[in-house]
Image (cartoon, rainbow, N blue to C red):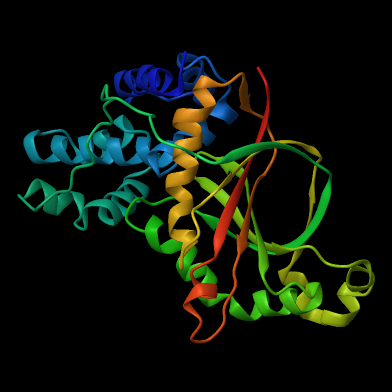
Length: 299
């Protein structure tokens, strides 16, 4: 069964049980996969984590109940899994922009529509890839937890990069690598995932890392990446290849993976940003590219 069909069955299950406590393992079983793999692929294909989808669907239905019904706010809060009216009101106002009381009085509401699976022709395009056995790696980086909020996802990576230049420059200098940055995506869960910018430091920099950086060392983590097989895909050469990574990842998961003899394995996803820059040299500045390394194993 391919991921698209599996996600369709899982969505049917979610929609049928939105007013009940949802077990992520039970959702994943509908797609014949583990909870880890289902949440990971769902996030890649849909652009937001599974928990965000469930929360937004419940708040959409809660808004409709308030606008059209007579149930008490406390009862609607309990119906959609909130422990108290206060927690429900905070979540409701964050999503809709108005309070439950205002919704009952005719305030404008937002709607997050149910996902639907469309049958369409896919593939028929070229994707450059290779399968590589990678050795174990030790990377040093810093992270941010990305929620995958549909309204903010496009800006998350860009804003994170722009707001953490100092940390990047410190690691870049210590690594003595000025044209290659690693990204690490891991700890996938119902609320999102951890995203790191990282570099591979030489032994001399690692030995005195805490001493050299002092209190600032606490902002970094050393990440042990296990050896294993990866599907390695590349973006085209262009000025801003980071903008192409999400589409490339979706293509790999929705087209290549279902037609292969491989599945994702439980390991971090890596990326490599090859970032050349020379003032006034368009030939150099348009030769940048990104790689994504998806951890895979035989079915």
